[in-house]
Image (tube, rainbow, N blue to C red; front, side, top):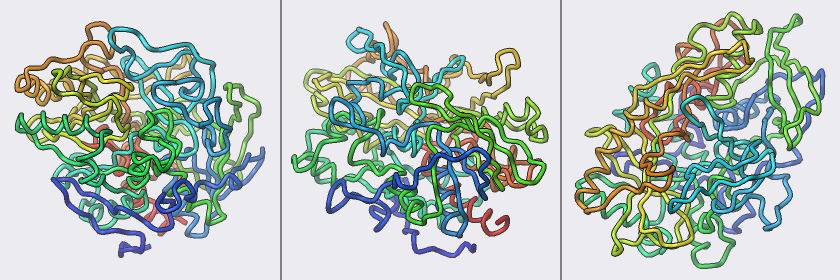
Length: 548
């Protein structure tokens, strides 16, 4: 395949320093017109792969990178089978509330992956703990605990697209060299970022509606405070269907983002991967998915290709079958944590001993830290709030921080502004295999978050001084200001041009590839999924042209 423009590319548009993608893309699962009737991942294409099966290509994971790979391989005429540890939520029966996914204020067994107690990102409210006991279940959000950090990840067909806020940001071009130094920025910005933005259905909130809707009062307050302190405030693009959200506001469709839905899934308006890349993949007839299957081993097969051991589980986490399948080529797309853990284990246990020493290295948290501010009584942020962020505060060049103006959808007036910051942290951790436990550990230290806090304070200390306000201390524990215990944006662990070549081919083995966020060394300067998608588009184009 050449690098000439394709029909699915859109022209990048510059707004306030960020590159925005197309607002719509016909035929890839947009939700306009007949709301909710858009194409989605076809459950008829679901599968339960059989023991002894042989497949040309196996993709481990169904998030952004894996979905790109599956679609482009299928369009090139190659049959692809994908395995996904989580559920195919398109096939799940509604709960007692009549919905597939619960509200952020009402987490239950559907919300968390294999936990018996919720682990909400905001653990406290008004000084009271809010976590509760739940039934262990294959829920949609995994709060995976390591020493020093909890990593939040999506579980299900569609991966992280199921649980994120959808902020689809392309980094400023001048920052790209620090993100992926071995990648040609010119081709990314002329070809692969536009392609990714178009295929994901990236668009921006209508400014006139933003100004009048009560659901973004919190964002308008965030803008006022940022600008009065001299910070650049910007609209940020997203993959939510903004026409649907406006229809939610006028009461003509069922509410979703305007009904407190986001991190535990979104029932209607968000353009998740099952409505975009995976919908197109299903339409080719060449892609099938086995959900509730996890890969535990990959090793070269005597007859060629790779033998992959899969455990099939039920929704309680019990192993109900163990299968060995043969794949001509294997794409690791289980996310930064999933791919890194698996590769580190395979190298240490001798299944793939020729993997190099860079496997497991270069992991970072994208500088994530959360914080809340207590505003004055004359600055209410709204008792109703959209869960989809649409704006941010940019102090990257001067202070090393970009902050989403995030919702705090409590269903009551809180007089609080809430933010998720992305910071220019240089901290990097490594995964290592623990032979005593048979598990993979991560070397992250909570103390490293102080770098991110210091950078975030360049924004919020100044806003508090200007406004005469203080930090909230009741959201993350008792008298605790900063949410420094987690990341939503895991990156790295199999870094491009180190653990792999410059297109994701793993060193030491022909036919093994990495095509997810583990390729990106720890920080993207903005929300990472557009960069993950664009890099996957770049890499799979080269792999198809030269390897298949």
